Length: 140
Image (cartoon, rainbow, N blue to C red):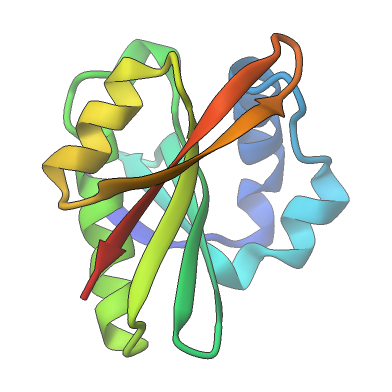
């Protein structure tokens, strides 16, 4: 498995995965504008998932991470998280923060495994279905 920077050729695959995973998926034009912030996991040329890390000054935000359903629980998200954290360190970020659905226990466990801690909650943050967001942060 390799982790690399996203390219324009990845936009359709990222958009399809967004639509499959999220109730409010990013459109292709938005994905295109964020390519420099996006990492892609692939194996033998096959798209496995992506992660998007944005930053302002020394503050990082994991905006999205997703893995194709048939490759979940096989280490893809772990490798993407390692790459996101490495990129955060390279950019000398003070921290990376994220929001995750309260009911997404698998994602919460992944983030905890990588050193993120719960720092807050946003009530009714998500729609379709309505759900609280758990705020998590990794401080470097």
